[in-house]
Every structure is written in structure tokens, then in C-alpha cells.
Length: 405
Ligand SMILES: [Zn+2]
View 1: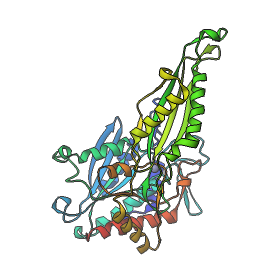
View 2 (view 1 turned 30 degrees about the vertical axis):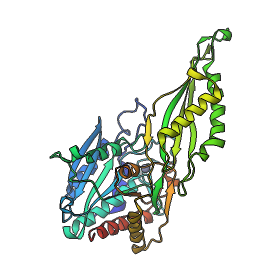
View 3 (view 1 turned 120 degrees about the horizontal axis):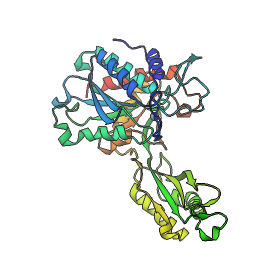
């Protein structure tokens, strides 16, 4: 069954799959991936793929859809993963109708058009073409549609858990062994991303003592204490963190303070103030020592002792290293050129993706997809249809080239 990639992308954008980004009150449409999972499940079945769900949480399932090649992976045949996450970022403040999937002047507009339903549509179109080939002319391809990429990577992180030896041995496992390669769809503008930073996020609290604001001398103001800590963190960002680690493609280590909450009312001396810290680690840097360095530095420079505490990280996304994905990247670069869209640059990026979870288990992984990052997460998110068509062709050629391995 041939797939019209533009029409498919319109369908995908029209099905909201907004990540609530940790807001517990956000239930029902447009939030959650379940409606999209059902659609993908039906589509993959109609393509003749072997489809399985992996439950991650209530109403949150990874979907793994496999097209078998010949020989099968268990018999020495190649096994490739095409990964595309199902969730999108929220739609607040958008200046285009987020789910209308309107097409104007060669662009398709809507939430997820670029990040990453464009890549998802292109991968599906490629697999639909591969399904028409005799099994000997293609590798086994597993489409991995993960959940919750935008707020914690829990889908990809659980998916690689299926490659533990005891999980692989289960009779209902969709995998007979670990894959040989993974391509993760994100808007890279058809560049091949071979490395990216990892991310670590945690909360830091300043503690004080509450009192009536008419008698502040009886209290101990937690906001003032956090103010001291913030001054130190600003200096740390400017003068310290960048020298701790660097990567030729991804750039230096960074920190950013993204939120601050403190106080209950203006007539109460606040007993607590909380910030959220985002620390980016280039490939090769150890996230745990990166965090310890900051915590120790802050304690020393502020002298706040037990009045400043740190929670355990609520998010840990590993970096993607370019140490062992060279041959995979070269093959993809060749496919881009053969499709007439080369030469494709190989680059590093600062943001995290599912690819790092595959890479961490020893599966060579790269990030590649249509659409540009500058158009992702924006108020008028869009994708160029030319890029969409090109990506579908490139994914197809790339996958087919693995059959001869
Ligand atoms: Zn994405």
C-alpha cells in the first residue's frame, strides 16, 4: 500500500498528542498520546507490520511495528530501528490553528508538523515502500513510536529495557536481539546529527523561617538566601562551567536556572524558595560528577550550609557520543547524496533526543529528519513539504542499502 506522505502528515497533525509537560491537571484532549497510538497501530497493521504495544503509564504506550526482512535478525539478518516520538509540546500562544494542518506556499503548518510528525510520516512512507519489496531486498525494520520524549524520555528509556537478556528471552518480546542501528527522527534539516549533549535537571531549595512581615526580624528570609545562591550561579555559568567540559561538535557544558518559586504572600516572610537547574553535559562528561561539582561550589561560595538543599535529578538524559556511529552516519550521508540532496553535513547539537538511549546500550544511533529546529516548538510551527518528500526518499534508500550487509 503506497502512502501519500503529505496526506499522512495532515492526518498525524490533526490528531493532538500534546505532552502535559508535568502538569497533573492536564487530562483529556489535546493531551496524551493514546489517540495517535491507536491511529498508528491501525495504519501499521494495514501495512502488514507486526505490531506491539509497551505500556509506559496510564494511556501511554510505546508502539513497536516491525517489518521483517530475510534473513531474520535471529538468523543473522540486519535489524534497524526508525524512531519517532509521538508527543508534541503544548500549543499555548500559537498563532496558527495547531491541529488544522493547513498547507500554504509549500509548507504545512501545525503543532508537531516539524517536531516530529514530519519525520514520522516520512519514516512510515519509507517503510510502506519497503514492504512492497521482496523480504530479501530489505532489512528488518522496527518502527519505534515512543511516548513522552519532550518531558523526560520515559518511552525510549523503557524501550531499551526490552533489550536486557531476560527481556529478550520472553516469548512475547518483539525483539529477537539488540538492533544493529537506530535512526531517530527529529528536525535536523536533513543534516546527520552524530553527537549531542546530555541533560540533568533538578530542584534546589533555600530554607528559612516564616514570620509576619511586620516583624521580619523574627523570620529568616529564604528568598534572600536564594538571591545569594543565584548570584553565585550566574558567576558559575559565566566563568566556571564552560571550562569543565567541551566537545568539538557540541560545545561546552552549560547551566541555566529556568524557574523560581518562593513565598506565599507579601505579608509573610518566606520560609522556602525553590529554583530548577538545567545542566547540559557534552559527550564524555560524567553527569553525576558535573552535579556534585556545582553543589559543592554553591555550598562553598554561599556559606549557606544546610539551608540550601538539592533534590535528586528529576530528569537525566544521556549524551549521544560520536565514538561509534561513524559508519552508520557515513551510510546515511551516502543515502542523502544518492537521493540528490547532498552533501549532508554531520553535526553536533545542544539538545537531547531518544538517540542517546539507544547509543547508551551500544547500538549505533544518529538523528536525522526533515524540517528545521528553528521551526520546532514555535508559535507557527511548520515544515517544508520539499524536505518531507526528500526525507521519505532518503529513509527508504538508507534502509534498502542495509539489506546487502
Ligand atoms: Zn522532537
